[in-house]
Image 1 (cartoon, helix red, strand yellow):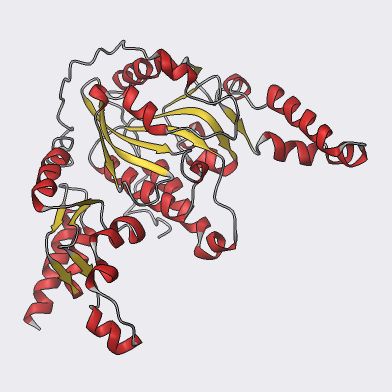
Image 2 (cartoon, one colour; image 1 turned 60 degrees about the vertical axis):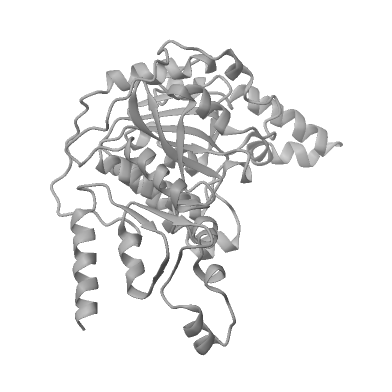
Length: 378
């Protein structure tokens, strides 16, 4: 009973400290039973490959209850929690690399929720432009590209600390600097699942947004999202509820928020990814942005259904109507005309515009409704 009481005291302190000071857990050996809930409530969890493991019930209990043979690593090793469960935010091959990365993470964070993150001047010019970004988006809208090329280009010194690199890789979250200031970055990754939002991606991004908001770290959102992942597996798994977590996290955040739409921004996923309609401060778009309820092909199939069906060559008619819709509607200028986009910017100037926007938003204040707390759709 004394051991259980001590566990409860630790958990209590974890919860009271949450959002007050950053909490980091290093799992450098076995962590089993009730002990796993303390690191689970901290902000970042580090694990070591082939050394550390975490599980509520160990292999022996699993064998007794389910008659299933499984090793500690396969049940709750670093790879399992880094790639499948999402419990681990960082995994490393040895203790030395783990501790070095903990120091690197701390360099981005404030000491508590009343401070701002430390400023570090990396001597990277604010006005630096990258002409190569003008050619980052492929001409074929169905062709992929690596979002990390853009991230490396715009951040100070191309330094980016990615969080949960191996989990829900269709969305990228992590810390970097712009003009010396720490920023939290959320970006769709078109190179993985076309950058769609699914259950794991929504949860991963939502928790990161809430951490940044708790510790006064501005949010930058890079958008190329074709929508939410379709299918019965996602629907039955609660994609509605999990997607709502990300929506809730963005709306609740009071830190400076800036969005850049690079290419696709379709349907509800456009709204959820830090759009103007959920109180984002500044929304930019590249000329290649496509902001719409549906993609051009899907929209053409609905709008011109009768014409396509009556055509002697339905495939050619669909292709022509799709191209017509893309040229007429799938561009950022209609959204800009309505005030949903603040400016259509040249890709090469993205870094400069982001830094100037952060300077403009310095000292941002928001009035929040008086309440005990909201009820996030957990």
